[in-house]
Length: 260
Ligand code: IPD
Image (tube, rainbow, N blue to C red; front, side, top):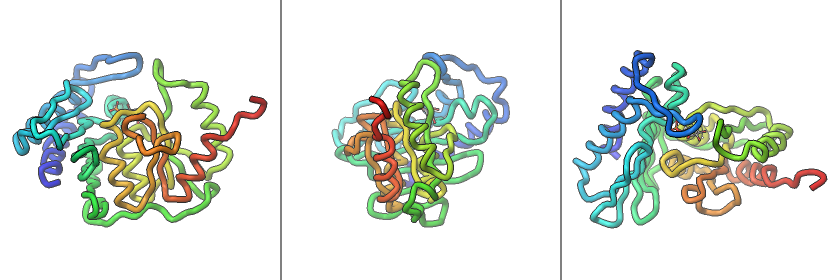
């Protein structure tokens, strides 16, 4: 975890600097509505170099570069160097560096840093989750009618907009509020911190999810993929919350469409 936190702070300094001069950054499109900037690429290189210098035999999966298969066969870093690129490029101070360590297919350590607010979320398996020095616990609310639920919306060229709108309509009719903040790793950290009671999104990648999943579990929360299974990273979908909210949100998301 120390290695991960040092790498996150180092890359965070660079991102904070670039955020101040965002209009000068080179930006390109990876696909419709999917932006990448010099800042993402620089941050990933720095993090990859730091992590692999400390643990040369581990594998590395990052959003912006080719996967490196480790020689030790057991460990892999999973990194999103800039989660919330669209926020970042629009001057919205809500973005993060997300770093996770996987061992034999299980996430065992997590660090999520928002360099704009200096909020650092960390967890180690069996050791609890923390926001800076404060131990985290998911919210205790049991009813969707009291709950604030985070989500991520599909964008131009991505996801099934029609079925998302059906899900949104179902959830909207049951909850106290819905939020779309724009950085999945922070959304999951917000669930761990009890700021959001629950969260759901489809169309994500392992690097958006890996660290946040451990944060939620270590804060006493529950995580499943959209079908209630145990494969959110493989499926790229997640439904999360405390035991009651995750189940209730799952049920609402799977409610049949009237007339179908
Ligand atoms: C994106 C953010 C966003 C989510 C998208 C992700 P990126 O990550 O997490 O909240 O809705 O699906 O791709 O591309 O900014 O690293």
